[in-house]
Length: 345
Image (cartoon, one colour):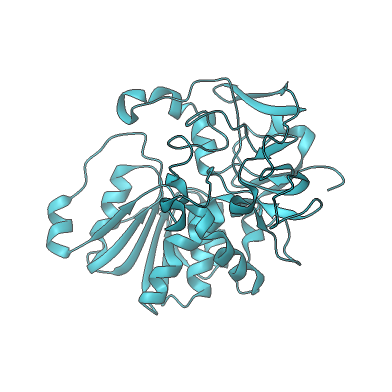
């Protein structure tokens, strides 16, 4: 089979590797049918991860298989697998998790203790698990990991449910449940922030301000009912919830300065660059700041349920639908949210 391999900055290529085989009766083999890059993939393609070892403690050196967002079709299952069957369309979460250790049972699937630290698809951290831009993928804990795609949902629209769509749900939905009618600030550069705008509007946010220098992104945010701005000016005590997804510490600092007393800030940016936060302002206001990789498997069912309700339109964020065979040429191009689709799927 082929797997799409990152070989250098802005350069990927197909490489032939052996077909994956079941190694236990609890595993599955899946074939991605709709796959999309997430914001981490964009950072990898830009060369950021390989240059930041001095700041983050590790680097991600090529070559390695890329991709960790897809909807796939189940090809084969072990005898002990009961949650899915061959032919099913499934969401494949980005992190490898067993589903049975203490952390997995607590919903902390990105911190599974059964597998090496940070085990994931799409980057050789915590072992080599391959990538979801591959013709075939082995899923080591099929019942724990795979989530059937509800009937009627478009695999193209939900290709990002493996990570960014479900992450966006987690960034804002629980907080709006606790604070109905809250005002939401979104400072972003890519798909995560736009998904947050859509979800926040659907769940009753009183106001959503979306900040992004890209005019096309701002136009889409307005289509989701948000007001928009090209840059963020300090707006003290104006928003109850802030979501930062830029990877820029200065933008995170501005976001927390805009929070109301005891406001909440969720940072989904990949902060490869160091920086300083306005800690005294945060202390005086009383700010809860969460900076984290998402344990996405715990949130996929709720995120898919919201999509199935018809109250949101994740498909609007899809910027291009591109043939699977064009991955090497098209993936390094700068698109908002391209989805690569296998012919005949």
